Image 1 (cartoon, helix red, strand yellow):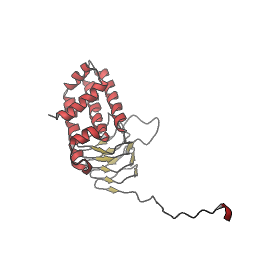
Image 2: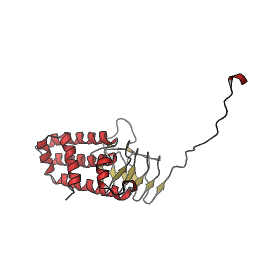
Image 3: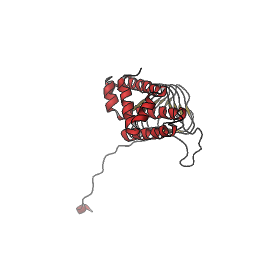
Length: 228
């Protein structure tokens, strides 16, 4: 069973978005327990991989806004599953999923669509500005930094089918990287910050950005009015 720490955080999020009676209904579903297990797995992965956390899971759970984004995603994703199974409360639970997802965005600055799929041990670090689109799929043990966009190639009137990236297992994606379209990022891929990707990347690849040029030059002394 998941620890009380994670289950209490999930219940607190539900209490902000659901009636007490609906919270009791949701908490009985196996999908809720599965979401708690997944969120605890994410928490332990964060503690193991982020040296700044010093392994303190309580500090991550209560103080890291990027973990709140992942926690709320796990809950909202589970609520959508429960809504499909619960004929009596399906519409109400689906609305609660939207509220939970919005609450996660407000608390973290990251937007993870509740219908996307994310595997085990997911870490979102410094996640402000991250956007993960509806049809994105992310494998197990992935680590993503802030400002990453997994988006579609279009802006408006995008097709309703698969339009967002698929990311394999153990991928690491640097800050402000943008990956657009129904492309496939393989297993064990490392992507440096600020990359823009619109095509498939094979497994065991390293993607770096080499085209940007930063210049440092000395200031020229300003001419005084008297010398003009």
